[in-house]
Image (tube, rainbow, N blue to C red; front, side, top):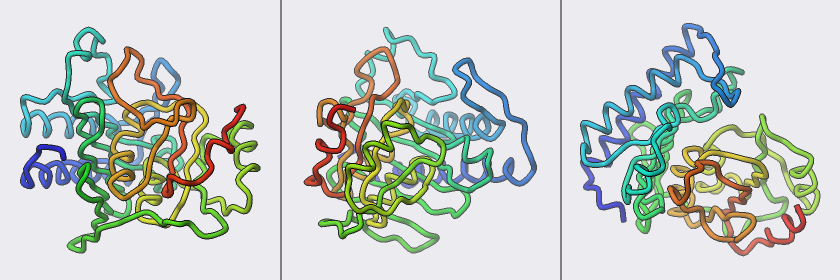
Length: 268
C-alpha cells in the first residue's frame, strides 16, 4: 500500500486533472515547440503542467521530494538518498500532443523503496483518469463513475497489441512477427498501460529507451489490475531510482503474465 490516506490520494488526482486542464488550454490556443538538449520536444503545455503539479505536490506533501521530467537535473548523490518521492511526467506523449491526435497523458507516481505504490494517469482530452494503489486495486474514473478494472486473462486470439505511433523499430517489427495472430492497435503515451489494465489491450512491447517518468504511474495501474511490466533482459519488474541514469531498458507489459514473452524477445 502507498501509506497515503484517501484525502491525499484524491487531492493528487485533482492535481492531475488541473494539469490536464492547463494542457488543454494550450492545446486549444496554439503553441510553439522547442527542443531540449536530447532533441526531445517541449511545449508551453509541458511547462505549465509541470509548474502546477510540482507546486501542488510540494504543498500537499512537503516532506516528499518531487522529480519531474522538466526538473530532472537532481544530482544522483541527492536522489539516491530518497526512499520515497513523487515521479512525474507532466505531459507524457509530447509528440502526440504536437500531432494533435489526443493520445497524451499526465503521469504522477509515488515511488517507495524503488516500487511505484500509487499512480495516476489522466487523459486531458477525454478527462478519463486511471489510478491505483499497490496491493489494493486499480480504477478507471469517468466523471462521477468509477469502476475497478482488471486485465484480460486469459487473452483471446488475436492478441491485441499496443504499438507506439512514434516509435516502431525493425527490432519491434521482428518481435511482432513472432507473436502469432495479433491485432495491432496504435496508442500513444501511458494510455497503453491503462488500456491493458482495463482489458482492452493485451500486450505492449517496447524495445528502445524510455525514461523512468514514462512508465512508473502506468506500471502501478497495470500491476494493481493484475498485469506486469517486465524488463526484457531480466524478467523482473522495473525498479526506480536505482542508478544515476534515468533511462529504462527494453520491456514488455502484459495483461497475462503467463504469455510466452521470452520467446518473442529472444536474441533481440
